[in-house]
Amino acid sequence: RKLHFLHCKHTIKFEQGYSHHQFFTSITMSQETEGYIKTTTLNFVSRKAKIDGAKQVEIKGRSILQEGVHVRGDYAIVRIGRYCEIDTNTLLEPPLHPLDKSKRIPQVIGSHTHIGSDSQIRAAAVGSMV
Image (cartoon, rainbow, N blue to C red):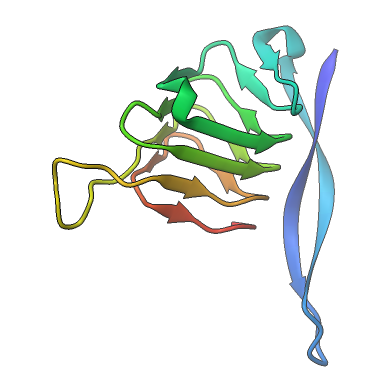
């Protein structure tokens, strides 16, 4: 079986003052679905992904975490929006507090976001439709 996923690919800004319009394209993944855990909110998390502090990690729905993804929920809360794809070997780590380096602040990844492979995200927020 192939895994099909609906993902925001483009954002179009219309002339004449209309707001942004997004359209979706279907992505077919070559990995078998047996290599993923399907959650109740239809997220697909690779069995080879590592989530530390899972109680502090919130994935809204219909997102994919590929193999080698490492989410550091043991440092602070990590929120991942809907329809996100986090590619292979990516690190999501909440950043240090700017005033108190012994603390961390929550990390928020917006909806309809794609983070490429071999990325290291140590930011407080990544916007939507990125």
